Image 1 (cartoon, rainbow, N blue to C red):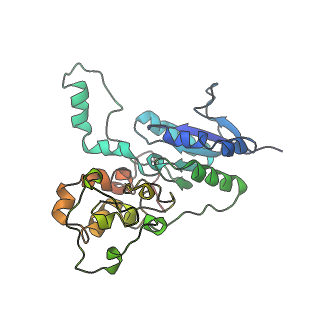
Image 2: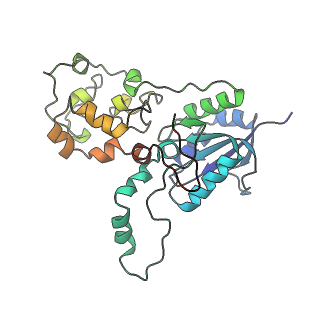
Image 3: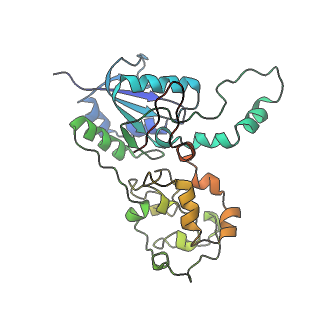
Amino acid sequence: MTRPTLAIVTLGGCDGCLMSIVDGHEALVELLSVVDIVSSPLDASHRPLPESVDIVLIEGAVTTEEDRAHLLEARTAAKTLVALGSCATYGGVGGMRNLVADDAEAAVYGASASRPQIASFVEAPALVVDVDVEIPGCSPSPERTHAALQALLGGTELAEGRRNLCHECAREKVDLLDHSAEFVSDAVVALMELEEIDAKRCLLEQGLLCMGPMTREGCGAACTSVNVPCRGCGGPSRRDFEQGAKAVDALASVLPAGALMHMEDLTGTAYRYALPSSLFPAMTTADDEEVRRD
């Protein structure tokens, strides 16, 4: 009996999502017993991507034209294309460079006309293909990654959470749930500025900017469970709102507007992982079909 085929394509990024596959340990051994990996960065033989593959995992973001070409090749070959991690799903941290691309290039390479042509150091290209499955996170936990792969290989429907992260966060939310005009945090504080963190109370109620209300569930609230505010790597819980704008809208009612704008890197927080997809939810080019996002 022919086993299903799997390929892994790595684009621009830190390879953290690739490591989430390797860190599956026993789950990886189980995966290798039921699937043939036909192309992967972990393959010392450097086998090219075949013309047809049952499942292709895309890890990393499109940061160069070479990345873009690899992604288009993967979309053509894949029967099921999976965006693994926030870079592949939303554009990732690398998309933040679109705000400072020209200044950063000048700072690194200088203004000399004789400098090498760095064709790749331009604005991170827009998302260019449809994907069939998204596994967001920076990086997704090994358990989440392998559970998704097992569901795909078994032909079962992959459950994708659409509530926000607060639903799986065990912290007690009292004042925030009252929706009263009386509750407004006195200030936005950085994590290290608190003398003590209440391990049970909602971090927003303690004045920490947490992206939980604007972020998709699915990570098990891993960060907030260890006293660290959510930074939104799971992306928006719904496609009908834009994560950064939702952050401003939601937090302005509980955090002082002045402090929210000046005491915290709002752009770097609200758009840290999803800037490209937030600003460009649908684009067309001469070569690509219109990008659709469910």
